[in-house]
Length: 294
Ligand code: SF4
Ligand code: SF4
Image (cartoon, rainbow, N blue to C red):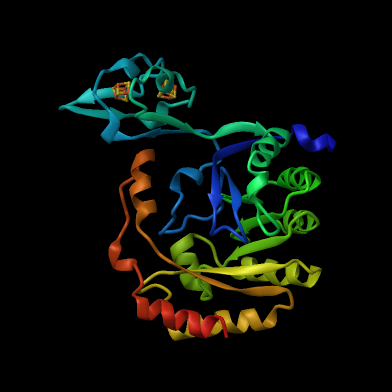
């Protein structure tokens, strides 16, 4: 194994037997930290770069064991458990004393070697197509992710990376040597609208995608469909034109918005901003697919 195998990563979650994160059966490793702030984020607990305390209010029995937190994060007011998260250092003490699993730390430090060993536990299920997918958060946010991909590749794994593309191009070109498929998010083709709903323009994302394509990187475009935001003919046509302009892109996946991420926001103390009105209709999905994948 390479010398970088002992580099450490903050892993938010490892999901097994995933069928939608690339070809075949895959194990998906979610890394913490993302440069975007999508209004419809489905993994809000993975956006922050550091460890983070999650609180599942429905599991809390108000036993007050967690009140012993040395930073005074936990309190009880008017029959409710309230948290002052600004004081939390994510030390994990309260998690260890909670009897019901109402508290959890999102973010576990693991070396590339440890992540690879964890992924290899499922090797018997991968078959010819399956393997590992890095997701997040944004897995290419840090340059050292290249060493993780190198370690996974040296273990003989098929590798995919789900990226928002808003990262240093050096991280992408470095990773490309060890990545079989980039799942490239195109959240919107309109730069102003992209900035409004994600916090950044899409210009760098598209430029990085085209540069990766020129390098020969194999990609699939992943297009979230959000009713009333990007469910318009001009966007569908722009995705189709983008697909046509790429030499090494194998196709487009249309992913309908769902409101599950909104509910997850509550676990990190943010309001549930899930909105079922943003779910596209079957007709919209059909129309988007028929134009985008032409
Ligand atoms: S993780 Fe540590 S600092 Fe944060 S609330 Fe729990 S005990 Fe307090
Ligand atoms: S220790 Fe767990 S169950 Fe008890 S009050 Fe704290 S969060 Fe709720």
